[in-house]
Amino acid sequence: MIYEPSDDSFLLAKYVKKYARGKVLDMGTGSGIQAEVAMENKNVKDVLAVDINPEAVEFVNKKGIKAKISNLFSNVEEKFDTIIFNPPYLPLEKGEDKETSINVCGGKIGNELIKKFLKKAKKHLKKNGIIIIVFSSLSGNIQKLFEKYGFDAELLEEKKLFFEKIFVYKLQQKI
Image (cartoon, rainbow, N blue to C red; front, side):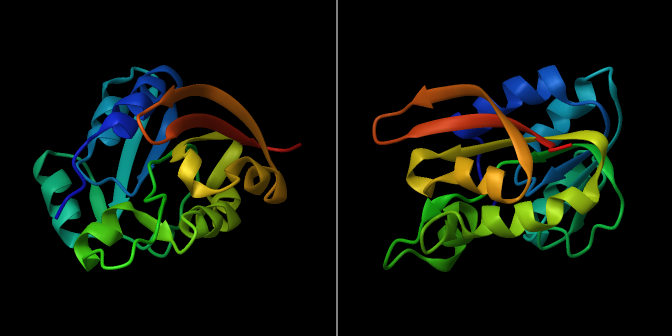
C-alpha cells in the first residue's frame, strides 16, 4: 500500500515548491508527490526519492523519478542541499493493521521515527542545507527534538484539522 497524498502532503508540497534547491532527498517518498514538486523547481538540480516500501519505490521509478529502497538513511550515503520528510507521525493505535501502521504510525508515541531521522540527518546535509518537515500535534513535542538535535527551526505554517493541527517547519543546522 502506498501512502496517498493528503492534507499534510499538500501543505508540505507548498513549501517544497518555495524552498527546495540544489540536490534534494525526498525521504519516505510514498506516492512521490514531494519529489515531483521538487523536480518542477528551477533551483533543483537532482532529486533522489527513498522509501522503506518496495511498492512505493517501484511506483515512483515508473514516474521517471530516481528512487531506491532505504529505511531512513540506511541506503543513503551522499549529502543534500534539501531534505524533504513527510514521516509517519501518528501514535500507535491498538489493532491497526501492519500496512496502515507503516504508512501513518511514527512509533508508540508518534515521534520515534522523527527522532531517528533527526539523529542522522545532519551528516546528510550540506553546509547551509535545509530540511522541510511536516508533522502533527498528536506527535508529541517535536519542537523540543529540533532543539535537542541541534537544529534551528522556523515554523512555516500550521493548519488546523478536525482532530489535530499539522505543522510544516524548515530546519537548519545550528551554527
